[in-house]
Image (cartoon, rainbow, N blue to C red; front, side):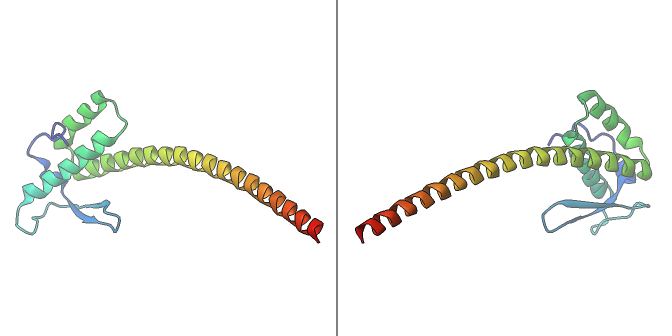
Length: 141
């Protein structure tokens, strides 16, 4: 991931606490006031949040020009604005993911239908073969 969208050193306003859920997805809880991380390094935590926003921005469906405009604004944004941008980016990415899931569901349903047709044909063929065997057995008696 390129740092081209992370600009400025005043990202200390963009602090957040991070944790991973059981699927490894980053969950973000914006803080109201800047605090120091475990090592007392406020800027490190702010840069992590800046990278997180940059990755979200890069993954969004915004045009390159829109992404660059947002990136230019990020260093000057207050925490509430950053939280709103975060929500916008998450909504965009969720919308993309849902659309992709819908496309996959269409493919899965088509494959299931094809499988069901094949199974029905096999059942019919098996039933007919068993009927023929039963006729042969009855004829032999």
